[in-house]
Image (tube, rainbow over all chains, first blue to last red; front, top):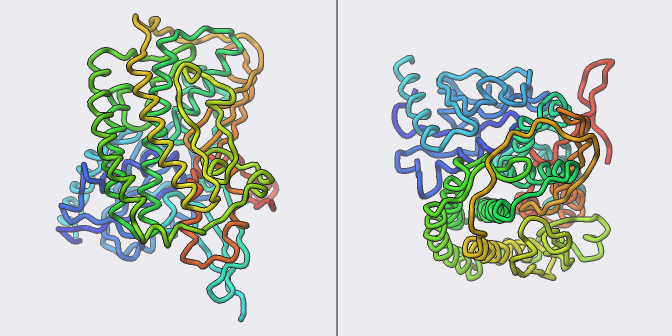
Length: 128
Length: 376
């Protein structure tokens, strides 16, 4: 697993948009994670870190799993928000992707998400 | 040339949320478009029935992370109508401030994403940089950046103390300064001109036929705004313009939204300086409702947002929601035909879609327990 400048891919399993907005807000001038080399990539094949959001709806969860499998190993998976962790307020019962690091909140602040990415990279680089 | 099917989604870099567009191209030209909804369907209308009123308000805010204030406000209004509750003048002003801040943050978010989908990342950085000021104000007002739960049935949960008012005045000044830069970059950039002008054209007559709402209707020359037509909250007491453009293309829609942000800043200044003195009534948990039914429309950042509620005593009996993007999605096939594949992200982004709001129903066949598609 790469130690520096990880590329991240955002994967939504059906959400209210809140966690996605806060994840993209990490890349705006105020938080600007690109100064740490973290870059948002459009393709799952280029990613080192997957940011999973959403509660796993009936229609999206199967498709999300397929996209998740396209991300090459080794990878760090980070679950973002209450929905991705437990199903959240919607109590979705769909199969959700399990992660290495959990970021709590509804939605979590961008600073928490950045902390989560760093923690995930550290944890997985020592594992592999 | 043989026609080729191009799948656009459910996971596509141009779409933040999972949603499927089926594009048929002949060479480079788009000849047919179909779309499939339901990836974000979270059974909200069904789950809300078991919730108490205060919990239902929280759940309905979670319909959408961008326009959560519009949904909670519409829901609170229906219950206030059923129970004939009076909202204090100060609470009305605070609601207006929250709703307008939400409009600013939604429009700037959209502007950034439009810039990104047109291949102009500078606009994304500038718009989202300005947007952080709106989020700082929302945080001071409601305690959270996104999913601000400041609305309650019968008023608001938090007052606006003088320190917050001062913070809003300061941040709003900075926002206005940065927003002027964003506006001048947008209006003077040749790249955006070529990518947006004449793209995704929707004439006035077809816009009326499809019944589009919000900035999309205003971009096609239809004068419609719930804030002016059926005023609620403090919109009767403030003065503002409803911007209209007649171009009908992606550029006209962008101009409407740009002007709306200026108007929202203007409205917030009026609300802050004209805030009625005193304090809001102490927060009381709303537990028992009268039996009845009512509906309300409010102007969400994307257009009119409709809520219909049948109230039982302690919980809702029926809730129906029609979010603005549902109306705005219908003309997408018409808008795309004749354009090239590279314009698809721009056209989809130009209607400012929020699929989390739109996905209100999914058809499941009980016999084989599979999700079915419905033809439009």
